[in-house]
Length: 256
Ligand code: DGL
Image (cartoon, rainbow, N blue to C red):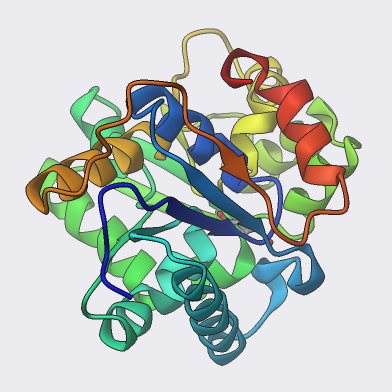
């Protein structure tokens, strides 16, 4: 299929986390149509192997381009770290945008000892370690990846408490704290109030959703593929049993 201005933008994640990116996309490009795949049958991605994530990501991309998407946003740090290059190679005719943890904005805001919370799979990926090392060298600071097993599922089940994070800081920083936190999984912004409650006042928390939406808008603009519609776009959620639609309504009320 040839990408067309009026075609939808596809977005996928293992579940509800990608809705934090969809919200940012809606903020930057409200008139676009979106297909949101929350791949809950394969969730959680964070406990799977590199090869499994690559296979799943290729399958999702094939399905979404098959549905007529003009571009793909991988709204998942795990799938981006493990598979964005593979998906780009398999679909060279399309813009494929991945999410990058907001380590650069955190360094640029003056943080020098940064904790990047992500899934165990993400922190094991070379792409992720390279990114942290390269910004650390560039800005003269350090960013540490911390794998948070089970956290994405707890967020979907609404069972996460500040205790989880208090223990995490104690385990990794003793009585101290990092001076900036990056949420390197798209589920985690939905727990940002709880995370802030577990931290001393003034420690900033960053996520990559706005950067991803800005990059998507820029790529579509360069390709002449931004919609000409002036009315609010539609969102299609294939394979959803109602969970994602309800989560979207509750957690992102501004974008209904
Ligand atoms: N939301 C995903 C991420 O950004 C994955 C969560 C999971 O399924 O483990 O990494």
